[in-house]
Image (cartoon, rainbow, N blue to C red; front, side):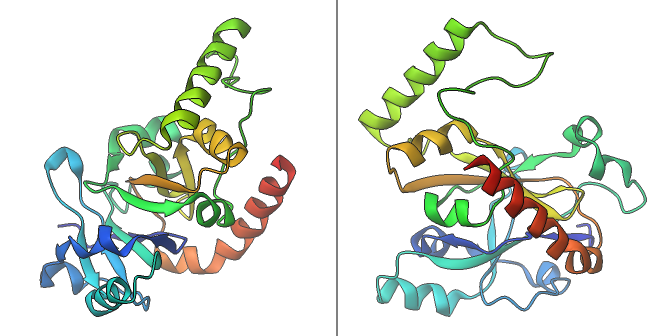
Length: 231
């Protein structure tokens, strides 16, 4: 296992029932985790059938279940798939894609908790739905059709756990987490007050933790300003 670890920039409020089913992280992995948070999940790799595991906080999870606490704060840690010397993929999406992997497990949180983190890269609604880039364009009619179909599905059926939102750890310059997929669903859920949602976790690489701790306040400020402009 790589001892180069990345840490989520955020604490995620997750349903303790989703965490309780995780096995304990093997000692050879926990030995390298240097993080003071009380509940930490070690992210697995779905493609390799590696399940997520619980580094610490089993007692807190069990107590939360006993007290029927809906959500508890959790940090994610992952083994970087990008070698320490290979820094360019951390900053460039095209170079990063071959290294990206997805968590084995899916977790439940609330839209309010997720949006409070200011990790969206933009806000989608009926007016700007599926307007992505000059290289990826669809007709106005198709944009409206897709958005209305998704909106109708969410209104009638609620959030479908089979299609969780994706959050990528340390996506922004190897430091700040960002929503990786699901901005349209976030917009529709916000419009119709759909609170309980499902998320999966993506990751690839991260800058050394000391850089994250040093520069994260700057990224948080920029992300909050960007989020406020989108609202």
